[in-house]
Image (tube, rainbow, N blue to C red; front, top):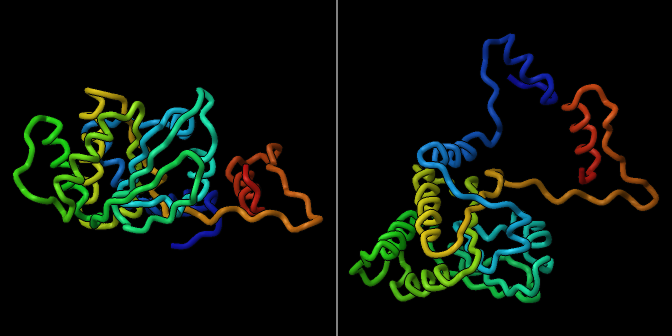
Length: 237
C-alpha cells in the first residue's frame, strides 16, 4: 500500500490491518538487535566535537554525512587545543576533507569481516593474542599498533553506519564493535556513535538568491504537517 504523507500512513495502515515500517527499518534493526542483547555505551555529537582525540570509522568513511566533519571534527574544542586522529577501517582511499589538526589514515578491510577484526582485538585486550600472521587481511602488526593508539586515547569514539553494513548477520558485527568499546573502557574512555542507520539525505539546498528561507511553522496544528512543511522547503530546522 502506498500513501502520500507520513501523517496518513498510520491511519491507512490501521484501517487495512497492516503494519507501518520505516523505509530504513532493516538497517535500524541491526542497531536495535545489538542494543537489546547487551546495551551499549554511546556518545553525542557535542562530545565528539569537544573531547574526541581518536575517531575510528568502521565500515564507513562518513562521506554520506558531510556535516559530520563540518560540525564535529573541523571546529575547535571548547576545552582547549585538541589534536585529532581519524582511522578508517574499510576503504583504502577514504573521502575525508582536509582539516587543520586532524590526521587521517586507513586500514583496508572488507566490511563483512570487521567482526573478525573486533574479536581478535578483544582477545588481545584480554591477554589472549592470536598466533595468526594476519586477520581479515590486516597484519597483526597493524592490529597491535591500532590497539596501542586506542588504549592511549583520552576520549575515543568508534563510529559506524548500520545502513552500510549490508550483509548477513551484520548485527553481530555491530555487537562486536559495541563489546570492544566496553572492553576499552576498562583502561580509558571510549564510546560508540551510530550514524543514523540510513543512507543519509543530501545536504539541504540554499534558497535561491532573493528568495527568503521559509521558516518552520510552529503554529500548524499537526506536528507532522509542520515538520513536512519545514523540511520540504530545503531549510535546516
